[in-house]
Image: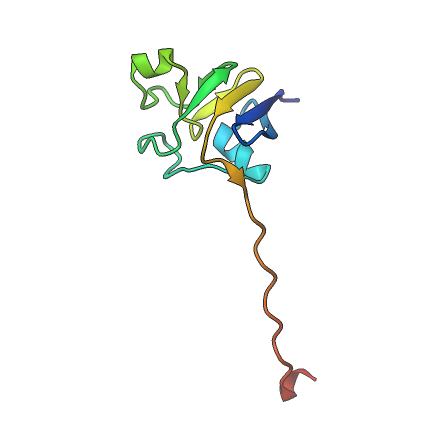
Length: 112
């Protein structure tokens, strides 16, 4: 059974669990947390956020962060996998709004 780690997203206070073998971004989406992203490979850096506590590992050999950014705690959630409980600073994170129900369609003669 794979380990799962709790993630706290600041400043919104959102919480979700991130399985160890899943990117933080996919775990957030599965839990109903929206995060900016542009692609699954970390090259756009659109979803970059700061890790305040915890540890991550990367599912790719060379994530698109400089050594200084890594030292400052910046991570790319689209390719980072939780290796411990995490606290991240992600100001644009928000709950995913449910889609509105489809509008009712009037019955036609063929559907009575």
